[in-house]
Image (cartoon, rainbow, N blue to C red; front, side):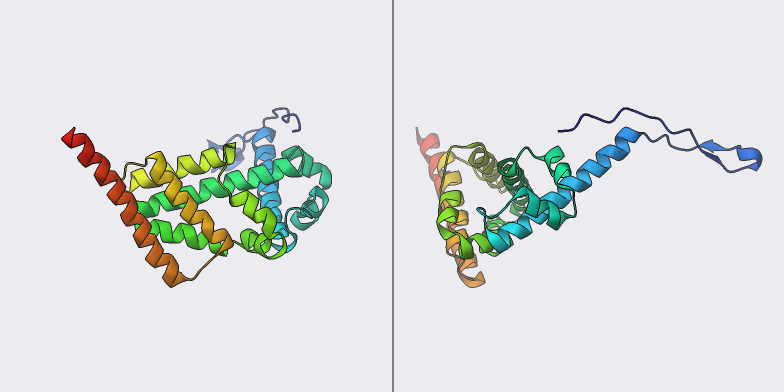
Length: 219
């Protein structure tokens, strides 16, 4: 990552009266402008990486290709990401956080709706579809449950979705939901099947939470 740009304060601007008298305008710094440019560059790189994954898969994703698609200099890519693995990690982290936030919002109204949305998002995601087409073996590995930081983040997001729906969010419930959602990366199904299954999974989570509560109450 490049060093932070040295702070340089622009001269205040005035407006509103003769001779420049009036309100002093907002002071902006080189640091804030540089930060905005960095954010735009990072966003462009992540969007380009999604496109390349959808078209070519993981093995053919390179920093040079993503830079070209993003309209960035290759050196700029390395200001944001150490290498292509760092880029892929950042992309996956962003996808998990974005999907988790959307599903949590939906779950406050109806858990089945949130689950159906998550499954459809997984099934129809361009990068997932690209991997399903050009690198299915790698996709199997990616969606298999693991203990790495991304799976920890996914479990945390899933637990938040269940809690938003008023469920317990036990590890067993989280595992059930994640297994079902990620299965759509390999077997997308259709809208009807996803909705029917989402209702069944939601009911299973509800039953598990209810059984636990009954067991505690009778103890």
